[in-house]
Length: 133
Image (cartoon, rainbow, N blue to C red; front, side, top):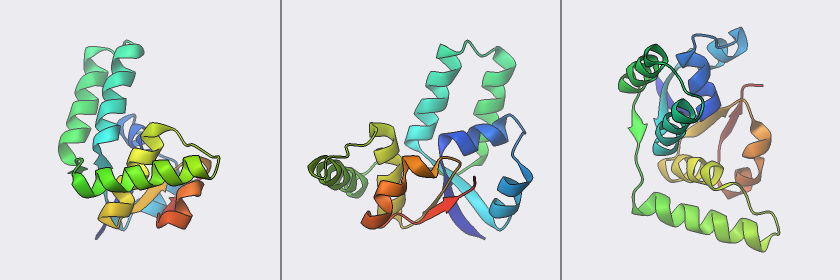
């Protein structure tokens, strides 16, 4: 099974046990992994949305089962290039989306997302995008 990075929206669909049949089918032959950004976003969502103890346990349990990509120098430099190039092109992108894209590009992993529009600008920079929507 090959690894595929999932963004935070895809991860949350699995935590809530509500992935669509299309998502399940597309990811059936892959092992999902997440970036440090998804760990951070899920933590933030839990606090801002006042998730209860049970939901936080579900998040922690799911995260314990998936491989994670943490930031390193290669990812940081990739993010810097993405940020500079998208700004110079007049299309600065959201910081967290750039971090997720940088992780995928640097690690040479595909990104599965429900929000292709958030990442389409990174395809020309080497992002392999697996659209689930």
